[in-house]
Image 1 (tube, helix red, strand yellow):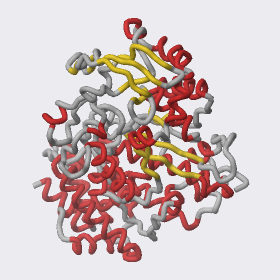
Image 2 (tube, rainbow, N blue to C red):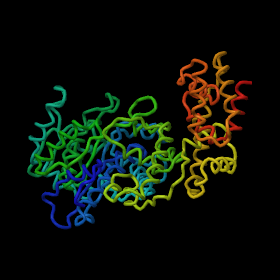
Image 3 (cartoon, rainbow, N blue to C red):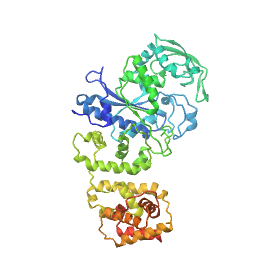
Image 4 (spheres, one colour):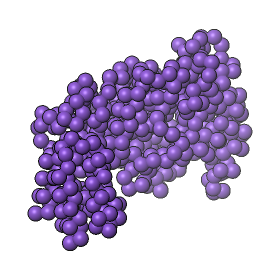
Length: 525
Protein backbone atom coordinates (compact mmCIF):
# COMPACT_ATOMS: atom_id res chain seq x y z
CA UNK A 1 0.00 0.00 0.00
CA UNK A 2 1.68 3.19 -1.21
CA UNK A 3 -0.57 5.65 0.63
CA UNK A 4 -1.50 5.25 4.30
CA UNK A 5 -5.29 5.55 4.75
CA UNK A 6 -6.37 8.48 6.89
CA UNK A 7 -7.98 6.46 9.68
CA UNK A 8 -6.73 6.07 13.23
CA UNK A 9 -5.83 2.32 13.07
CA UNK A 10 -3.50 2.99 10.13
CA UNK A 11 -2.03 6.09 11.76
CA UNK A 12 -1.34 4.00 14.87
CA UNK A 13 0.14 1.12 12.86
CA UNK A 14 2.52 3.52 11.14
CA UNK A 15 4.02 4.39 14.57
CA UNK A 16 5.16 0.82 15.29
CA UNK A 17 8.94 0.45 15.42
CA UNK A 18 10.47 -2.92 14.48
CA UNK A 19 14.00 -2.02 15.60
CA UNK A 20 15.74 -4.99 17.19
CA UNK A 21 13.37 -7.62 15.78
CA UNK A 22 14.86 -10.16 13.43
CA UNK A 23 13.13 -11.87 10.49
CA UNK A 24 10.40 -14.21 11.70
CA UNK A 25 10.52 -12.88 15.26
CA UNK A 26 7.10 -12.21 16.80
CA UNK A 27 5.72 -8.70 16.59
CA UNK A 28 3.71 -8.54 19.79
CA UNK A 29 0.58 -6.46 20.27
CA UNK A 30 -0.68 -6.62 23.84
CA UNK A 31 -3.83 -5.97 25.84
CA UNK A 32 -4.18 -6.51 29.57
CA UNK A 33 -7.04 -8.11 31.50
CA UNK A 34 -7.38 -8.20 35.27
CA UNK A 35 -9.27 -11.48 35.94
CA UNK A 36 -10.72 -10.32 39.24
CA UNK A 37 -14.01 -9.61 37.45
CA UNK A 38 -15.92 -11.03 34.50
CA UNK A 39 -15.11 -9.90 30.94
CA UNK A 40 -16.70 -6.54 30.29
CA UNK A 41 -17.41 -4.22 27.39
CA UNK A 42 -14.17 -2.37 28.23
CA UNK A 43 -12.18 -5.57 27.71
CA UNK A 44 -13.96 -6.20 24.43
CA UNK A 45 -13.29 -2.63 23.30
CA UNK A 46 -9.55 -2.77 23.94
CA UNK A 47 -9.14 -6.10 22.15
CA UNK A 48 -11.30 -5.04 19.18
CA UNK A 49 -9.44 -1.77 18.74
CA UNK A 50 -6.01 -3.38 19.07
CA UNK A 51 -6.99 -5.92 16.40
CA UNK A 52 -7.94 -3.01 14.14
CA UNK A 53 -4.41 -1.65 14.53
CA UNK A 54 -2.97 -5.12 13.89
CA UNK A 55 -5.10 -5.40 10.71
CA UNK A 56 -3.69 -2.08 9.54
CA UNK A 57 -0.12 -3.13 10.42
CA UNK A 58 -0.46 -6.30 8.34
CA UNK A 59 -1.79 -4.30 5.41
CA UNK A 60 1.15 -1.87 5.63
CA UNK A 61 3.75 -4.62 6.20
CA UNK A 62 2.66 -7.65 4.15
CA UNK A 63 6.12 -9.24 4.53
CA UNK A 64 5.70 -9.33 8.33
CA UNK A 65 1.94 -9.97 8.45
CA UNK A 66 2.31 -13.54 9.74
CA UNK A 67 4.62 -12.39 12.55
CA UNK A 68 2.05 -10.06 14.12
CA UNK A 69 0.32 -11.61 17.14
CA UNK A 70 -1.92 -10.33 19.92
CA UNK A 71 -1.27 -11.33 23.52
CA UNK A 72 -4.29 -11.05 25.81
CA UNK A 73 -2.38 -10.94 29.09
CA UNK A 74 -4.27 -12.02 32.22
CA UNK A 75 -2.71 -10.88 35.48
CA UNK A 76 -3.82 -13.89 37.50
CA UNK A 77 -0.70 -13.52 39.65
CA UNK A 78 -2.28 -10.39 41.07
CA UNK A 79 -3.85 -10.53 44.52
CA UNK A 80 -7.59 -10.14 45.07
CA UNK A 81 -7.99 -6.59 46.41
CA UNK A 82 -11.77 -6.55 46.83
CA UNK A 83 -14.73 -8.83 46.27
CA UNK A 84 -16.49 -8.06 42.94
CA UNK A 85 -20.22 -7.47 43.04
CA UNK A 86 -21.10 -9.89 40.23
CA UNK A 87 -19.78 -13.22 41.58
CA UNK A 88 -21.10 -15.75 44.14
CA UNK A 89 -19.38 -17.03 47.31
CA UNK A 90 -18.51 -13.53 48.50
CA UNK A 91 -17.75 -14.71 52.05
CA UNK A 92 -15.21 -17.26 50.79
CA UNK A 93 -13.56 -14.62 48.62
CA UNK A 94 -13.46 -12.08 51.46
CA UNK A 95 -11.45 -14.58 53.53
CA UNK A 96 -8.89 -14.79 50.74
CA UNK A 97 -8.30 -11.12 50.03
CA UNK A 98 -4.67 -10.54 49.13
CA UNK A 99 -4.08 -14.06 47.81
CA UNK A 100 -3.03 -14.51 44.16
CA UNK A 101 -6.05 -15.07 41.94
CA UNK A 102 -4.70 -18.35 40.59
CA UNK A 103 -4.60 -19.78 44.12
CA UNK A 104 -8.20 -18.89 45.05
CA UNK A 105 -10.96 -21.51 44.50
CA UNK A 106 -13.45 -20.88 41.72
CA UNK A 107 -16.55 -19.30 43.36
CA UNK A 108 -18.65 -20.79 40.55
CA UNK A 109 -17.41 -24.29 41.35
CA UNK A 110 -16.52 -25.08 37.74
CA UNK A 111 -12.80 -24.48 37.18
CA UNK A 112 -9.63 -25.18 39.10
CA UNK A 113 -9.29 -21.60 40.35
CA UNK A 114 -10.92 -18.19 40.43
CA UNK A 115 -8.68 -16.85 37.67
CA UNK A 116 -8.99 -20.01 35.55
CA UNK A 117 -12.75 -19.45 35.47
CA UNK A 118 -12.37 -15.81 34.42
CA UNK A 119 -9.76 -16.67 31.81
CA UNK A 120 -11.96 -19.38 30.31
CA UNK A 121 -14.84 -16.92 30.16
CA UNK A 122 -12.56 -14.38 28.48
CA UNK A 123 -11.30 -16.89 25.91
CA UNK A 124 -14.83 -18.05 25.08
CA UNK A 125 -16.12 -14.48 25.08
CA UNK A 126 -13.51 -13.14 22.65
CA UNK A 127 -13.44 -16.30 20.54
CA UNK A 128 -17.12 -15.86 19.63
CA UNK A 129 -16.32 -12.82 17.51
CA UNK A 130 -13.51 -14.16 15.35
CA UNK A 131 -10.78 -12.32 17.26
CA UNK A 132 -7.31 -13.80 16.81
CA UNK A 133 -5.28 -13.73 20.04
CA UNK A 134 -3.13 -15.78 22.39
CA UNK A 135 -4.22 -15.89 26.04
CA UNK A 136 -1.22 -15.46 28.35
CA UNK A 137 -1.43 -16.31 32.06
CA UNK A 138 0.74 -14.18 34.32
CA UNK A 139 1.05 -17.01 36.87
CA UNK A 140 2.18 -19.45 34.17
CA UNK A 141 4.83 -17.01 32.97
CA UNK A 142 6.14 -16.34 36.47
CA UNK A 143 6.06 -19.97 37.60
CA UNK A 144 7.52 -21.42 34.39
CA UNK A 145 10.51 -19.10 34.56
CA UNK A 146 9.59 -17.16 31.41
CA UNK A 147 9.94 -13.92 33.39
CA UNK A 148 13.15 -14.94 35.16
CA UNK A 149 15.50 -12.99 32.83
CA UNK A 150 13.40 -9.87 33.38
CA UNK A 151 13.21 -10.43 37.14
CA UNK A 152 16.99 -10.75 37.33
CA UNK A 153 17.20 -7.49 35.44
CA UNK A 154 14.85 -5.86 37.96
CA UNK A 155 17.19 -6.94 40.75
CA UNK A 156 20.19 -5.54 38.86
CA UNK A 157 18.41 -2.21 38.36
CA UNK A 158 16.74 -2.24 41.80
CA UNK A 159 17.95 1.20 42.94
CA UNK A 160 17.29 2.87 39.58
CA UNK A 161 13.72 1.56 39.53
CA UNK A 162 13.19 2.80 43.08
CA UNK A 163 14.50 6.22 42.03
CA UNK A 164 11.80 6.37 39.32
CA UNK A 165 8.90 5.36 41.56
CA UNK A 166 9.72 6.95 44.95
CA UNK A 167 9.08 10.59 43.91
CA UNK A 168 5.53 9.58 42.92
CA UNK A 169 4.71 8.16 46.39
CA UNK A 170 3.64 9.91 49.56
CA UNK A 171 6.64 10.47 51.77
CA UNK A 172 5.52 8.01 54.48
CA UNK A 173 5.35 5.19 51.87
CA UNK A 174 8.76 5.69 50.28
CA UNK A 175 11.12 4.02 52.74
CA UNK A 176 9.61 0.53 52.56
CA UNK A 177 8.72 0.50 48.88
CA UNK A 178 10.17 -2.31 46.77
CA UNK A 179 9.54 -3.33 43.16
CA UNK A 180 9.39 -6.91 44.47
CA UNK A 181 6.25 -8.23 46.20
CA UNK A 182 6.89 -11.65 47.82
CA UNK A 183 4.07 -14.11 48.48
CA UNK A 184 4.06 -14.96 52.19
CA UNK A 185 4.99 -18.63 52.59
CA UNK A 186 2.79 -18.84 55.70
CA UNK A 187 -0.53 -17.10 54.85
CA UNK A 188 -0.18 -17.02 51.05
CA UNK A 189 -0.89 -13.30 50.73
CA UNK A 190 0.63 -10.52 48.67
CA UNK A 191 0.47 -6.83 49.69
CA UNK A 192 0.98 -7.65 53.39
CA UNK A 193 4.67 -8.52 52.82
CA UNK A 194 7.43 -5.95 53.29
CA UNK A 195 10.89 -6.49 51.77
CA UNK A 196 13.49 -6.16 54.54
CA UNK A 197 16.66 -7.06 52.61
CA UNK A 198 17.97 -7.95 49.16
CA UNK A 199 20.63 -10.32 47.81
CA UNK A 200 20.78 -8.94 44.32
CA UNK A 201 23.58 -11.13 43.06
CA UNK A 202 21.59 -14.29 43.85
CA UNK A 203 18.19 -12.74 43.10
CA UNK A 204 16.78 -13.26 46.60
CA UNK A 205 14.91 -11.08 49.10
CA UNK A 206 14.05 -11.33 52.79
CA UNK A 207 10.66 -10.13 53.95
CA UNK A 208 8.23 -9.86 56.85
CA UNK A 209 4.47 -10.29 56.56
CA UNK A 210 3.80 -7.23 58.69
CA UNK A 211 1.94 -4.87 56.37
CA UNK A 212 -1.72 -4.28 55.61
CA UNK A 213 -4.00 -3.16 52.79
CA UNK A 214 -7.67 -2.44 52.08
CA UNK A 215 -7.60 0.41 54.56
CA UNK A 216 -6.06 -1.81 57.24
CA UNK A 217 -8.83 -4.42 57.02
CA UNK A 218 -6.40 -7.09 55.81
CA UNK A 219 -3.26 -7.49 57.92
CA UNK A 220 -0.18 -9.65 57.65
CA UNK A 221 0.34 -12.81 59.68
CA UNK A 222 3.69 -11.70 61.15
CA UNK A 223 5.79 -14.39 59.41
CA UNK A 224 9.36 -13.56 58.35
CA UNK A 225 11.27 -15.39 55.66
CA UNK A 226 13.59 -15.34 52.68
CA UNK A 227 12.82 -16.31 49.09
CA UNK A 228 14.09 -16.32 45.53
CA UNK A 229 12.50 -13.78 43.23
CA UNK A 230 12.38 -16.40 40.46
CA UNK A 231 9.92 -19.12 39.41
CA UNK A 232 6.74 -17.58 40.83
CA UNK A 233 7.76 -16.94 44.44
CA UNK A 234 7.18 -13.20 43.99
CA UNK A 235 5.55 -10.79 41.58
CA UNK A 236 6.49 -7.23 40.82
CA UNK A 237 4.29 -4.20 41.41
CA UNK A 238 1.90 -3.00 38.71
CA UNK A 239 4.05 -0.36 36.98
CA UNK A 240 7.10 -2.63 37.11
CA UNK A 241 5.03 -5.60 35.93
CA UNK A 242 3.91 -3.66 32.86
CA UNK A 243 7.53 -2.78 32.09
CA UNK A 244 8.55 -6.41 32.71
CA UNK A 245 6.14 -7.65 30.03
CA UNK A 246 7.25 -5.00 27.56
CA UNK A 247 10.88 -5.97 28.20
CA UNK A 248 10.49 -9.77 28.07
CA UNK A 249 8.03 -9.94 25.13
CA UNK A 250 9.50 -6.93 23.26
CA UNK A 251 5.94 -5.60 22.98
CA UNK A 252 5.57 -3.26 20.00
CA UNK A 253 2.08 -1.91 20.55
CA UNK A 254 -0.30 -1.48 23.48
CA UNK A 255 -3.09 1.06 23.94
CA UNK A 256 -4.41 2.14 27.33
CA UNK A 257 -7.07 4.29 28.93
CA UNK A 258 -6.67 7.91 29.90
CA UNK A 259 -6.57 6.90 33.58
CA UNK A 260 -3.28 5.06 32.98
CA UNK A 261 -1.27 7.87 31.37
CA UNK A 262 0.98 8.35 34.42
CA UNK A 263 1.42 4.59 34.87
CA UNK A 264 2.42 4.19 31.22
CA UNK A 265 4.94 7.02 31.51
CA UNK A 266 6.59 5.45 34.57
CA UNK A 267 6.51 1.95 33.07
CA UNK A 268 8.18 3.32 29.96
CA UNK A 269 11.00 4.78 32.07
CA UNK A 270 11.45 1.46 33.90
CA UNK A 271 11.48 -0.48 30.63
CA UNK A 272 14.28 1.77 29.32
CA UNK A 273 16.27 1.36 32.54
CA UNK A 274 15.98 -2.41 32.11
CA UNK A 275 17.39 -2.06 28.60
CA UNK A 276 14.18 -2.35 26.55
CA UNK A 277 12.05 -0.03 24.46
CA UNK A 278 8.47 0.76 25.50
CA UNK A 279 5.87 0.08 22.81
CA UNK A 280 4.00 2.52 20.66
CA UNK A 281 0.47 3.06 21.86
CA UNK A 282 -2.62 5.21 21.91
CA UNK A 283 -4.37 6.81 24.86
CA UNK A 284 -8.12 6.27 24.56
CA UNK A 285 -10.91 7.99 26.45
CA UNK A 286 -12.94 6.04 28.99
CA UNK A 287 -16.55 5.07 28.40
CA UNK A 288 -19.24 6.61 30.53
CA UNK A 289 -22.45 4.88 31.58
CA UNK A 290 -25.95 6.37 31.46
CA UNK A 291 -25.23 8.43 34.59
CA UNK A 292 -21.97 9.86 33.28
CA UNK A 293 -19.76 7.64 35.44
CA UNK A 294 -16.79 5.64 34.20
CA UNK A 295 -17.77 2.07 33.31
CA UNK A 296 -16.17 -0.32 35.81
CA UNK A 297 -15.10 -3.87 34.98
CA UNK A 298 -15.10 -4.89 38.63
CA UNK A 299 -18.73 -3.89 39.16
CA UNK A 300 -19.94 -5.24 35.84
CA UNK A 301 -23.24 -3.37 35.88
CA UNK A 302 -25.07 -1.70 33.03
CA UNK A 303 -24.39 -2.44 29.40
CA UNK A 304 -22.60 -5.65 28.46
CA UNK A 305 -21.65 -7.03 25.07
CA UNK A 306 -24.36 -9.70 25.34
CA UNK A 307 -27.02 -7.16 26.30
CA UNK A 308 -26.04 -4.97 23.32
CA UNK A 309 -26.43 -8.02 21.07
CA UNK A 310 -30.00 -8.46 22.34
CA UNK A 311 -30.90 -5.32 20.41
CA UNK A 312 -28.29 -5.03 17.67
CA UNK A 313 -25.63 -7.01 15.78
CA UNK A 314 -22.16 -7.08 17.30
CA UNK A 315 -20.83 -5.24 14.24
CA UNK A 316 -22.78 -2.16 15.33
CA UNK A 317 -20.92 -2.15 18.67
CA UNK A 318 -17.63 -2.52 16.82
CA UNK A 319 -18.75 0.38 14.60
CA UNK A 320 -19.20 2.45 17.77
CA UNK A 321 -15.72 1.46 18.97
CA UNK A 322 -14.22 2.39 15.59
CA UNK A 323 -15.30 6.00 15.98
CA UNK A 324 -12.63 8.34 17.38
CA UNK A 325 -11.34 6.48 20.51
CA UNK A 326 -9.80 9.69 21.82
CA UNK A 327 -13.22 11.25 22.31
CA UNK A 328 -15.12 10.55 25.53
CA UNK A 329 -18.60 9.19 24.90
CA UNK A 330 -21.48 7.57 26.71
CA UNK A 331 -21.82 3.89 25.90
CA UNK A 332 -25.38 2.98 26.69
CA UNK A 333 -28.47 1.50 25.08
CA UNK A 334 -29.66 4.83 23.68
CA UNK A 335 -26.71 4.65 21.25
CA UNK A 336 -28.07 1.47 19.63
CA UNK A 337 -30.41 2.97 16.98
CA UNK A 338 -27.87 5.45 15.62
CA UNK A 339 -25.04 2.90 15.53
CA UNK A 340 -27.18 0.36 13.67
CA UNK A 341 -28.36 3.02 11.21
CA UNK A 342 -24.83 4.29 10.58
CA UNK A 343 -23.55 0.74 10.09
CA UNK A 344 -26.35 -0.04 7.60
CA UNK A 345 -25.51 3.14 5.68
CA UNK A 346 -21.90 1.93 5.47
CA UNK A 347 -23.01 -1.51 4.28
CA UNK A 348 -25.02 0.10 1.49
CA UNK A 349 -22.19 2.28 0.17
CA UNK A 350 -19.24 -0.07 0.79
CA UNK A 351 -19.33 -1.97 -2.55
CA UNK A 352 -19.01 1.30 -4.49
CA UNK A 353 -16.08 2.68 -2.48
CA UNK A 354 -12.67 3.03 -4.12
CA UNK A 355 -10.16 0.48 -2.82
CA UNK A 356 -8.14 3.14 -0.98
CA UNK A 357 -11.30 4.19 0.89
CA UNK A 358 -12.38 0.73 2.09
CA UNK A 359 -9.73 0.38 4.86
CA UNK A 360 -11.25 3.47 6.49
CA UNK A 361 -14.40 1.49 7.27
CA UNK A 362 -15.48 -1.04 9.88
CA UNK A 363 -16.61 -3.35 7.07
CA UNK A 364 -13.00 -3.73 5.91
CA UNK A 365 -11.87 -4.68 9.41
CA UNK A 366 -14.76 -7.14 9.76
CA UNK A 367 -13.66 -8.88 6.57
CA UNK A 368 -10.12 -9.17 7.98
CA UNK A 369 -11.37 -11.19 10.97
CA UNK A 370 -13.62 -13.37 8.82
CA UNK A 371 -16.98 -11.72 9.54
CA UNK A 372 -18.92 -11.54 6.29
CA UNK A 373 -20.53 -8.22 5.41
CA UNK A 374 -24.21 -8.77 4.56
CA UNK A 375 -25.60 -7.31 1.35
CA UNK A 376 -27.84 -4.37 2.21
CA UNK A 377 -29.53 -1.85 -0.04
CA UNK A 378 -32.83 -1.07 1.72
CA UNK A 379 -33.97 2.42 2.69
CA UNK A 380 -35.53 1.17 5.92
CA UNK A 381 -33.31 1.22 9.03
CA UNK A 382 -33.56 0.69 12.79
CA UNK A 383 -35.00 4.14 13.50
CA UNK A 384 -37.59 3.66 10.74
CA UNK A 385 -38.72 0.42 12.35
CA UNK A 386 -38.95 2.02 15.79
CA UNK A 387 -41.17 4.74 14.33
CA UNK A 388 -43.32 2.12 12.63
CA UNK A 389 -43.66 0.05 15.80
CA UNK A 390 -44.48 3.22 17.74
CA UNK A 391 -47.39 3.89 15.38
CA UNK A 392 -48.64 0.32 14.98
CA UNK A 393 -47.67 -1.21 18.31
CA UNK A 394 -45.30 -4.17 18.68
CA UNK A 395 -47.42 -6.50 16.58
CA UNK A 396 -46.75 -9.45 14.33
CA UNK A 397 -43.66 -9.48 12.14
CA UNK A 398 -45.68 -9.91 8.94
CA UNK A 399 -47.83 -6.88 9.75
CA UNK A 400 -44.67 -4.82 10.17
CA UNK A 401 -43.32 -6.28 6.94
CA UNK A 402 -46.45 -5.22 5.06
CA UNK A 403 -45.77 -1.62 6.01
CA UNK A 404 -42.04 -1.95 5.32
CA UNK A 405 -42.75 -3.20 1.78
CA UNK A 406 -45.16 -0.35 1.19
CA UNK A 407 -42.59 2.21 2.35
CA UNK A 408 -39.59 0.57 0.67
CA UNK A 409 -40.35 -2.05 -2.02
CA UNK A 410 -36.62 -2.76 -2.29
CA UNK A 411 -36.43 -3.97 1.32
CA UNK A 412 -37.28 -7.52 0.19
CA UNK A 413 -33.81 -7.73 -1.34
CA UNK A 414 -32.29 -7.28 2.11
CA UNK A 415 -34.77 -9.63 3.78
CA UNK A 416 -32.32 -11.44 6.05
CA UNK A 417 -30.89 -8.24 7.53
CA UNK A 418 -34.28 -6.56 7.90
CA UNK A 419 -35.84 -9.69 9.48
CA UNK A 420 -33.25 -9.71 12.25
CA UNK A 421 -33.58 -5.96 12.63
CA UNK A 422 -37.37 -6.22 13.03
CA UNK A 423 -37.02 -8.73 15.88
CA UNK A 424 -34.43 -6.62 17.64
CA UNK A 425 -36.32 -3.36 17.09
CA UNK A 426 -39.45 -4.86 18.69
CA UNK A 427 -37.40 -5.95 21.69
CA UNK A 428 -35.71 -2.53 21.93
CA UNK A 429 -39.05 -0.74 21.66
CA UNK A 430 -40.64 -2.83 24.40
CA UNK A 431 -37.67 -2.42 26.77
CA UNK A 432 -36.72 1.23 26.22
CA UNK A 433 -39.19 3.22 24.12
CA UNK A 434 -42.59 2.10 25.38
CA UNK A 435 -41.77 2.48 29.13
CA UNK A 436 -40.54 6.03 28.52
CA UNK A 437 -43.60 7.26 26.62
CA UNK A 438 -45.53 10.11 28.26
CA UNK A 439 -48.53 11.27 26.26
CA UNK A 440 -50.14 14.59 27.07
CA UNK A 441 -53.32 16.31 25.99
CA UNK A 442 -52.95 19.27 23.64
CA UNK A 443 -53.41 22.81 24.86
CA UNK A 444 -56.35 24.70 23.24
CA UNK A 445 -54.17 26.44 20.65
CA UNK A 446 -52.32 23.18 19.95
CA UNK A 447 -55.64 21.38 19.46
CA UNK A 448 -56.68 23.93 16.83
CA UNK A 449 -53.34 23.49 15.05
CA UNK A 450 -53.66 19.69 15.04
CA UNK A 451 -57.23 19.91 13.73
CA UNK A 452 -56.00 22.16 10.92
CA UNK A 453 -53.14 19.76 10.15
CA UNK A 454 -55.61 16.86 10.09
CA UNK A 455 -57.82 18.68 7.58
CA UNK A 456 -54.86 19.31 5.28
CA UNK A 457 -53.68 15.73 5.58
CA UNK A 458 -57.09 14.25 4.76
CA UNK A 459 -57.45 16.58 1.77
CA UNK A 460 -54.01 15.66 0.40
CA UNK A 461 -53.43 13.01 -2.26
CA UNK A 462 -52.36 9.58 -1.00
CA UNK A 463 -49.30 9.51 -3.19
CA UNK A 464 -47.55 12.68 -2.01
CA UNK A 465 -43.79 12.57 -1.44
CA UNK A 466 -42.34 12.78 2.09
CA UNK A 467 -41.32 16.42 1.65
CA UNK A 468 -44.84 17.32 0.52
CA UNK A 469 -46.37 15.77 3.64
CA UNK A 470 -43.69 17.52 5.68
CA UNK A 471 -44.66 20.86 4.15
CA UNK A 472 -48.16 20.52 5.62
CA UNK A 473 -46.75 21.14 9.09
CA UNK A 474 -45.01 24.33 7.99
CA UNK A 475 -48.19 25.54 6.28
CA UNK A 476 -50.21 24.88 9.42
CA UNK A 477 -47.69 26.64 11.66
CA UNK A 478 -47.67 29.69 9.41
CA UNK A 479 -51.49 29.87 9.30
CA UNK A 480 -51.77 29.54 13.10
CA UNK A 481 -48.91 32.00 13.69
CA UNK A 482 -46.84 29.31 15.47
CA UNK A 483 -43.20 28.42 15.29
CA UNK A 484 -42.78 25.25 13.21
CA UNK A 485 -40.37 23.89 15.84
CA UNK A 486 -43.05 24.23 18.52
CA UNK A 487 -45.65 22.47 16.36
CA UNK A 488 -43.31 19.56 15.66
CA UNK A 489 -42.73 19.26 19.43
CA UNK A 490 -46.51 19.16 19.95
CA UNK A 491 -46.83 16.40 17.35
CA UNK A 492 -44.18 14.27 19.07
CA UNK A 493 -45.51 14.73 22.60
CA UNK A 494 -49.23 14.46 21.83
CA UNK A 495 -49.23 11.85 19.06
CA UNK A 496 -46.18 9.74 19.97
CA UNK A 497 -45.65 10.40 23.69
CA UNK A 498 -41.98 11.33 23.25
CA UNK A 499 -39.84 14.45 23.11
CA UNK A 500 -38.36 13.73 19.68
CA UNK A 501 -39.48 11.73 16.72
CA UNK A 502 -39.34 11.13 12.99
CA UNK A 503 -39.91 13.75 10.32
CA UNK A 504 -43.67 14.10 9.95
CA UNK A 505 -43.45 13.44 6.22
CA UNK A 506 -41.45 10.27 6.74
CA UNK A 507 -43.90 9.12 9.40
CA UNK A 508 -46.93 9.61 7.12
CA UNK A 509 -45.20 7.88 4.22
CA UNK A 510 -44.22 4.99 6.49
CA UNK A 511 -47.61 4.26 8.09
CA UNK A 512 -49.75 5.56 5.28
CA UNK A 513 -51.99 8.62 5.19
CA UNK A 514 -55.13 6.90 6.59
CA UNK A 515 -53.21 5.49 9.58
CA UNK A 516 -51.50 8.83 10.30
CA UNK A 517 -54.84 10.66 10.15
CA UNK A 518 -56.39 8.04 12.43
CA UNK A 519 -53.66 8.59 15.04
CA UNK A 520 -54.32 12.33 15.07
CA UNK A 521 -58.05 11.72 15.47
CA UNK A 522 -57.48 9.28 18.34
CA UNK A 523 -55.34 11.75 20.26
CA UNK A 524 -57.72 14.63 19.66
CA UNK A 525 -60.54 12.45 20.98
